[in-house]
Image 1 (tube, rainbow, N blue to C red):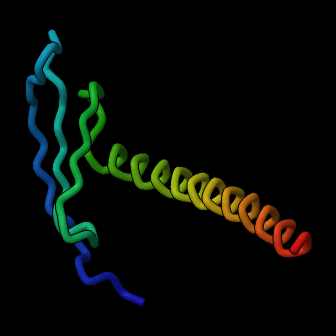
Image 2: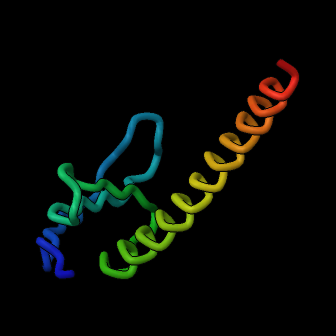
Length: 89
């Protein structure tokens, strides 16, 4: 399987957010395989965008796996309750 976009486009700039004293780094990644661009806001100023984007992608995989586990445990909880109700009737 090959990716549709082999080279994402990156915009790297400093921005100021409300109620934040220091400027933050905003990295916008387009053509990453999503319809909408991905926005990263960080205070990390020294690293190049590539390691930051790679780390973000790794964290997203972990978060998605955790969310899948949470969703599955909630599903199991309701499935057990439903089966207990079905047995009682």
